Length: 232
Ligand code: BTN
Image (cartoon, rainbow, N blue to C red; front, side, top):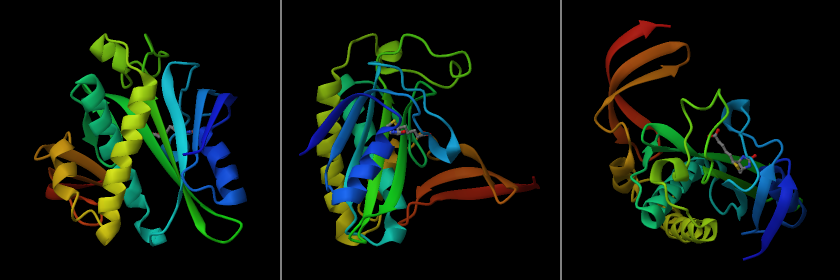
């Protein structure tokens, strides 16, 4: 696998996207020590201080239907969650669709982006941010973010974790490609869900729903048994 290791970037997703566009670099992995403009979901930023996390993105030449690509984020969450559990022994869980949670706080985020490459083939960029060794977080993140170090008090090898994540992703991706659905991975995914069979609150199209999370369907959507509806 081709690896691009950089000290400092704006966002590894951006670097991977540029390379993906140029050459359709399937499999290229971009890793940075520090991101100056790390991107989170929904236009948020992602705090990526030097040396204290895994800030990486890889390029996947999409040989799947574009409308199925959002499910790759769920697969990535499965791989990251599984790898962290295996390497550290910490009991992480997945918050649908793709946050990895440790003791109620977020330790990993995933941002999937799509591009059209020069040869018109889509490239998918999978960006993974894992808080590994931070000893503290900025005030505004303290309540909701944590690191593997803060929860486990043991140093974690980033190399080991990265290679485990990539191995697990490969396995899940192969399984996923058989049906291009979550059919064969649903059970495994549900077993890692933090809110499975618990009360959740969902906001969708200005409506607020409360109900019990039942797990995902084959398309990766979270099924919620609604108890009451409030106009939001
Ligand atoms: C989220 O909001 O939960 C997604 C966070 C994704 C962060 C990672 S860090 C590596 C890659 N490069 C980015 O700019 N973002 C992703």
